[in-house]
Length: 256
Image (cartoon, rainbow, N blue to C red; front, side):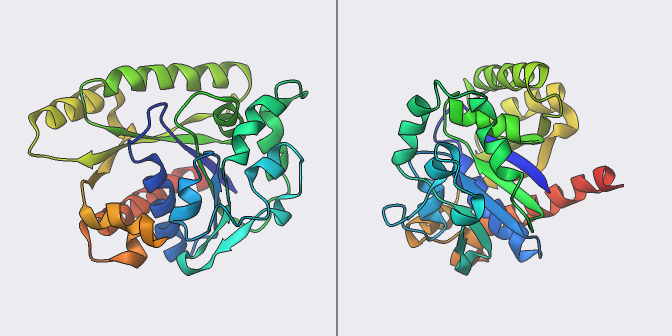
């Protein structure tokens, strides 16, 4: 079972959109996928067709009360994957975990009993919090989503430093899975400049697939659906299907 965190310390860069749509696209390819919503906003939960206000158990119960993951997971049945939901209760986890021993390993311990999944995707909050640290300690790799904008490289540098510190101190197996360019507009000259810088510094870590700005992709969450099931022929749905294919291909050397 591979555990991958989807992260960026900046909000609004397609992190949750990527978590939900990649989960659905990989599930459509026959993978058994678990999506863990670690953002108290609960956007991944709602985008997966699960009402965050009605959730009987959430990531809060998993981390703070240490309820078995089998009691927290719910099916996002129409979308083909499973979900650990989140809502505002998760905000309290930050405070309640402060005085807990091995607090940064709560998610790691919970996933020891997660059976039957090929892949776990973790939608991280847009900040370096104890929730994000839990995700990075539990994961083998991180997918970084980013827009090709002026301050993006500066934010990326800060995130890479965070990942490096976690790898140096707590989780030596942690690495970058890939860097994904989102809300991509090839007509914008700055987009091309930032893309060139990414390729120059990170080479093959940058996914060939780019996620375009797409109205159908933006509409899908309000229907509780990933783009694949909302409009499978949209450019957004096709892009995430391509990303899923690229993601799977990257796993082959590891499997060998």
